[in-house]
Image (cartoon, rainbow, N blue to C red; front, side, top):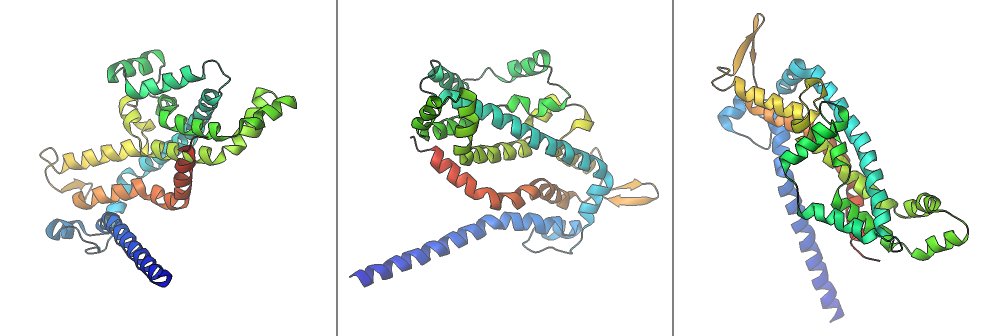
Length: 301
């Protein structure tokens, strides 16, 4: 019976492996088609549609994008990297500090802080009051601070970190107090090192959020020199659509003495590759922190 059960378990295990591989391939197909289309000839895509393999392999689309907007793209990438790095560090510092205070059972207002954070998840003042507050009172308009200060704390990440801190044995803090350690020493020397997995997890969450976000720049940035890469690519895509619609005439326009063909079909895919490329390269190495961080943070100590 044991041999039969082991045989059944192996069959089920192999079926699971095959199912996971097939599901992974299905998930990869859209990415493969995007990359394939970005390297295809625009006319071939327009005539024959998208495929898993490039049709008439060419890098013309990328050349067109970087020749026409290369300087702006590089500058926008710099602004986006600044926002991701500085914004992530700022948000992690605020979130972890808030979560630690909210996790302290001996702190009188710990529950009140948790309730205030939870309340903002359920109720919102609306877009217009938020815009007036950020621009008129906080003066977050057409400056780099506007790209990350409004996202200083994510409530989900805060509760995730609060569960991490509550899972740490309180006896460690009490022992440190007996030895003469103050609140800041306990926080930086004991709690922060023990919560490294949680901190890495929310750091990755914030970094992805800042990289993919274009709402703040869309609402608070009108200076083209301060456009992050997401908003710049959005505007580039809008301009290409305009040129190929009634406002622009056709898929080609004169530039100097030569005629420039706008790659309307493949440009969308090339812009997608430019946008998600760095994330695709980083995510496989960071995935284990997502899984481990959410699992540990979900268990209440």
